[in-house]
Length: 153
View 1 (cartoon, rainbow, N blue to C red):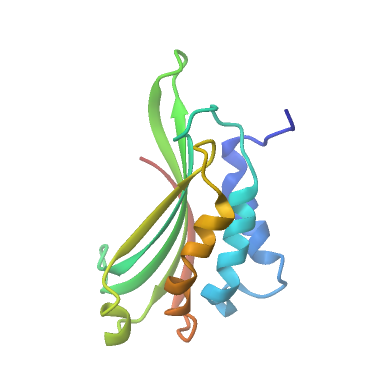
View 2 (view 1 turned 180 degrees about the vertical axis):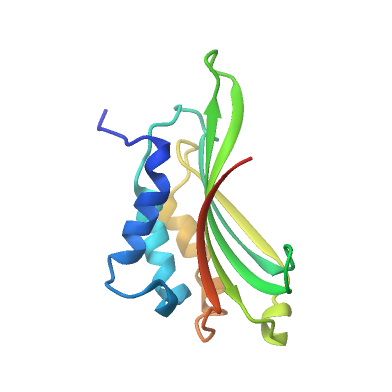
C-alpha cells in the first residue's frame, strides 16, 4: 500500500493546495477553492479501511455562529479516529469555509449538503460532477472571508 500521511497533516495539505495557485487566500473564489479541495480530497491519509472513516462534505446555508448572519459554503473533510481497540473514538474535521455577506440571492438558496466517503464504492469525480450546479450558483459572488481550521468532534 502506498504511503499515507498521518491525519495530523491534513490541514497543512489543504493549505498547500490552496496556495498552489500563487494567489492570496483573500483573492480566491469558490471557482478557485473547489478544485484545490478536490485535490486535497484525493490525497489519502492514514485511516482505517472502513467505509465511513474518510469523508468529504459539501454544504451551504445561512448561519450565525456567534456573529452576524453569513451565507457559508463549508467544504469539510471528516476523519473517524478509533481507539486502541479499533472502536470509534471521535472525529476530526478539517474545514474550508467561504463566508459571504448576506444577500437575498444567497439566502434564497436555502441549505444543502452532500457527502462522499472513500472506501464506500463511490466515485469522487461523479460526486464532484453532481455538485457543479450548486457551485455555479456561487460563481458570481466573492467571499467576504475564507477560513481554514481543524476541530475534533
